[in-house]
Length: 511
Image (cartoon, rainbow, N blue to C red; front, side):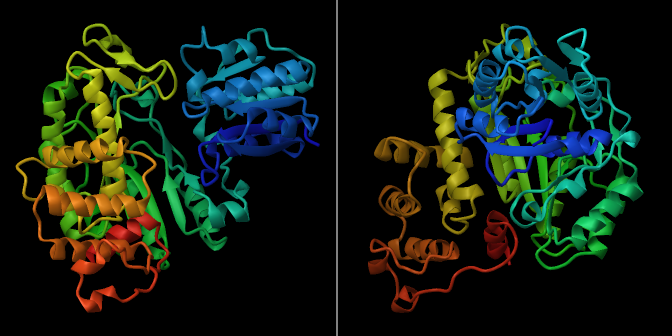
């Protein structure tokens, strides 16, 4: 039995709730009276309510995010009907802005906005002491980062063995890109380096091999970035993997030298490019030096083993699909292993709303509030792009077709146009871009390249069977067999390795 339950709906089991662990770590003397219960969005809210109430809690703290608003809203409604005496406290990015009119905020007893690491603990003391807050909405002041207890000891052995473990060396972002919550006034604050590295050392001793940093701008303070990378380099063991979100136009020689010393595949840099269009960048208050960015990506691709995950956003105010396509082609030429294609999302509290009327922005009414159309991109074109992005993720980002997928655009003037032709053909045949089995996707790719593009079936089959077997499959699809030489029809062993699967597949291609 626990007086305080910290809970949320994660997108998938593999994601461990970082925010809940921060709240728990900073409960002080109330920590022994609290527990964490995590669920996933596929679970029914009524079943979650049953599990929560079985512990007879006095306070339930619920983390609300863009991916779990519907589930959280239903859960709160059930809890307040079944146990109105339980204090339901909600917090998180989705309920930190534009609170008025949100049903979940109306039903909850208390809403804490902002970084609630310390404010939640004080609220719990008040509630358990019989003191009700004067206001329903508590706007948490930015906590003193030096006063925060780090949550890493709260990761369990199961978390370390089977889940994504999140860490952070800093909070905040100095940039003001209008589509991002980090655009709100929030100074960059760094955790004291020595205690942080000591916590990372303990995690390594406990067996953690995959570290995912959530810092918005890991390479902002170059001295700190270098120290953290050197720390991991000294302790590197086979199978270690480190994910960082990097500023793409900030990679000086000192940092380059350290990065180049890491084993191939163990570093992943997420670089948010979003747009190459200068006018669009200016319109959304985004600052980046494109020539420097391109030089940095070229260095990472050609002189290091870093796995580069680059982001582009379609549907930004004032940008046409033609402009986006030119940026996409530019990025493809730089050769990152993954290009994440996303539609603009209207996150609550972000200044992007100021462009709604001037640029005809229409957003979906339900999470994740993606843009449906703009004055430059019709709804039909936006839907077509969404199918394009789904197929790009399946064919290219997944690493399952590293040899075959480039055939779709290598002989074309535009990579975007080449892949769009394939996307339209595929959707015309299948009627959808999602929920298509891997074998069927492989078959369609073979048909398209040989029948629509007129490529040599033997060449295509030879590349496809390598891609097919790289995923661990040992059979030979019947539609490929007639086009393969005898020696390529033999079964192949399953893939091995300890890097995440996508990175492992991309790494095999470049080795």
